[in-house]
Image (cartoon, rainbow, N blue to C red):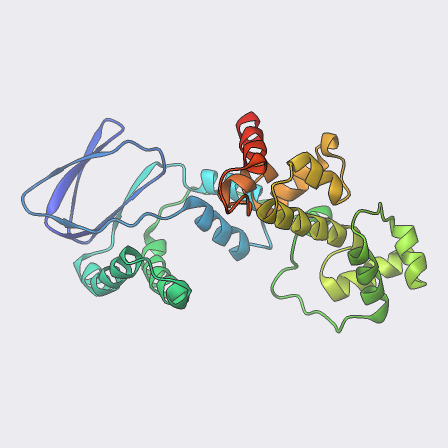
Length: 291
């Protein structure tokens, strides 16, 4: 954001002047140069694209089936690697104190206590900038019933009824042993309902079908084991009830967590040898390298 002065930006063999009141949005991995014209004050904000994709996903639950689809949609909506937004001098002056506070808070490494305050400041900036962002005209087809069932959570406007006892019993049964190859007819018999009745009752209570609920339980347990142990991904996959070689675990895990199991381990530490490097760490590192 250009807060004072002016400069020339150079990208994709194009030179464009920008000055006070302008915001330059730059996509990841985009080369851009600039030349100051005298004294210039600029505030730079780095936003994690995965963070923005996550918000795009939750803002459009009625149109986007999963996070991978949200990422593909974003690439179509915003094909330009650089955008110059003309907010105007008055708007930039209004946002200046918010930028300064956000910079100060993030520079000092605020803990959990300031989490929501930082997000509040960020959303105030995004609210001001978003209406000026240019996007391509993209036709988004409505979701099919199958795509709607595949969600982790139901749309926000759906009202859930109180959990039926039959649904609660089935959920408890699956939680008691997620490794079992539970079939819908077995679960329906346990609830003394038909398969169609169980599906309807369970979805009204939990927002998803019984077998999707089982997949979510397995993904959560996989994520916990990846975070808290040094077990190989293949071992973890089989421990939660999936066959590693089928590829099902990786597909479902990525749908709900946004990344593959191996990438998930790369993002966050398995509790992995707090006392120092050990065999478990070496195994995990070797697996990441192989992946």
